[in-house]
Amino acid sequence: MRLRYVVAAIGMLFVSTGQLAAADLFTAEQPPAPPPEERGIWAAIAYSTPDEKYGFFWGADKRQEAMDIALKHCKRDKGSNCVVVSIFRNHRHWDDDDKTGFPYDHCGVLAIGKEKRNPVTPWSANSAPTRREAEDLALKACERSGSRCTVREWVCT
Image 1 (spheres, rainbow, N blue to C red):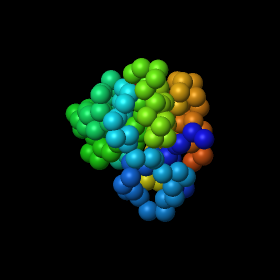
Image 2 (cartoon, helix red, strand yellow):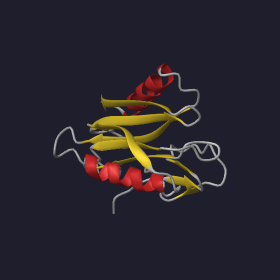
Image 3 (spheres, rainbow, N blue to C red):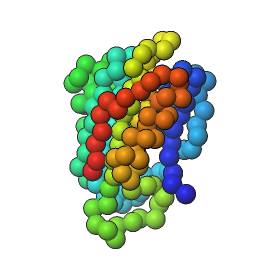
């Protein structure tokens, strides 16, 4: 079973980072703990809901490094409430599976609605083994709000 973590609210979509920032949210699946050895090449997406600013980073050796730099890029873009909304990683070597259950998803996508819904624009972030799969997952999750959504940004490690 592939592990995913998406948190949804009516009219708004968020992805969980372990800190919920809105009421009436439910968790579809909780993210597994990071691997102790943190094998792989890490990437992260940060997003600021109020002003639709975002930051990406890929190529980090450690999970926290990817998160910190994605947040920095979001804040540099004048994001007022940046939070990490997706973490994913790629294999550094084909035999580096650490058996923790944390997926080796190579691509991450941020999808944003084309129109504002009370009081924010719907969005979703997701990761998957391929760009197409990540785009499909993010768009479907975002469009559950009733909004038409587009891919705002993508990154593959």
